[in-house]
Image (cartoon, rainbow, N blue to C red; front, side, top):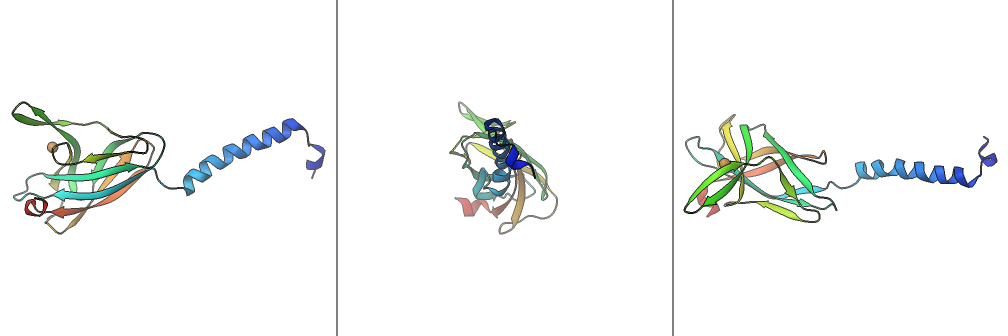
Length: 155
Ligand SMILES: [Cu+2]
């Protein structure tokens, strides 16, 4: 090995630099995920009416992360909606992305956001667990269990 012959300051700097680059992705791969999900549940309605999914998204990282896509193996359609008050009436609007602030959280909760769940692929009933796949702007994908509850259980 000729390493002892190449002990210039510039080589040392280059080595430090390349080690720095090499370590960054490794630390990320082994480290914790930015986003975690808590209090995930679904408000079930009878007669094949659309259900609504709710959860709190927590961001442990120092960068904002967007929820950019939702899918489910249990429902044909899963979309993020926002309930907007318009005087005495309310309507739902589609939401393309939901930003979870750095070191913060955002609640998908009744009266605000909900995940509209339609076209169940099989019979879903209170007491079941359904799974939603949440995709985030940092590349993270979370397969998240949601507890199915009847309207009476959520009053
Ligand atoms: Cu909706």
